[in-house]
Figure 1 (cartoon, rainbow, N blue to C red):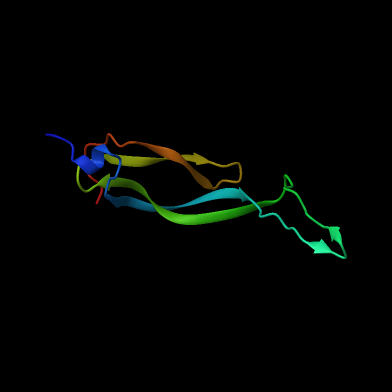
Figure 2: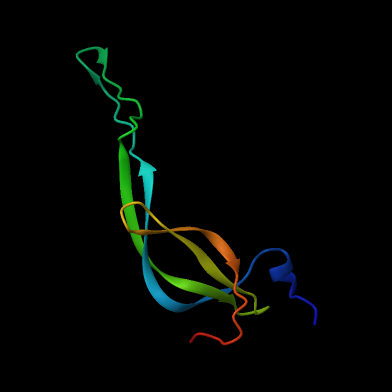
Length: 97
């Protein structure tokens, strides 16, 4: 069976499946810049200036057109939370609904 054109170009139509999990990630805090009394008070990125974000996501996804199934690669952080580091092909035979 030939793969649909849009999927071969990388434009899949995803449907989420599996359990919902909460993942966490960190991003650098935005720069605080300003001028006060004619002096530049810009604060550069500090190593400790990180914003922590979280989101509830599904464990996997499946393309509605071509049927490829992907599951999240999860790692446990030092504080016990989960982070997603990418996707891998789901080789599990039974479908999770």
